[in-house]
Length: 114
Length: 114
Image 1 (cartoon, each protein chain N blue to C red):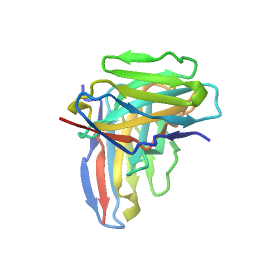
Image 2: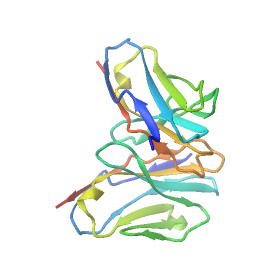
Image 3: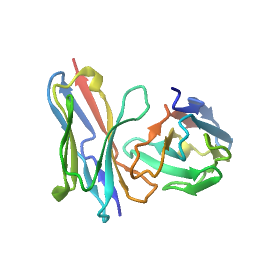
């Protein structure tokens, strides 16, 4: 059972570079989420998707874009990376509405922006 | 506004001690769900328990127990006879019915020393 798979696991970028983080889930979940985890702040929601072709902003969406072209994949893009985006990024998925179902998380992507 | 507070940033105990992790939440909703997740050193978040706002029964699962008290807006987590493998960051989280956003606490890092 792969569950939720994130690639890459580590990445170092220079300020201004762009990159895409990939999240794939094999559980046929409708809902997918991108979070960032910073020391002392828990997890904060960046963007989420309630189904293929739909995305919505979370708590801290600025500087990020997302796409959900296929149900199993949820991509997080940084168009012009900034040092403030240095963080650990987690992708999660759930079967239905978050309120009832627990989320299944990937292993995280540690991203450093120099 | 919704908020989850985990006032204990770090806790250190010796193996076999009991330890309680505190979680206090704020919400104006009458229907909501509370969660606990564990993040071991490997990084991925693992779901431990879900409790809805209408179910104030305490729950025990092996060495883990949870105390939900609506009157004090608390959902505390106790580990009995702690083990080194319990060392992790533990997150308390809140979602209201119909919402897609989960609010996480800042987490409590638990160190269990042999």
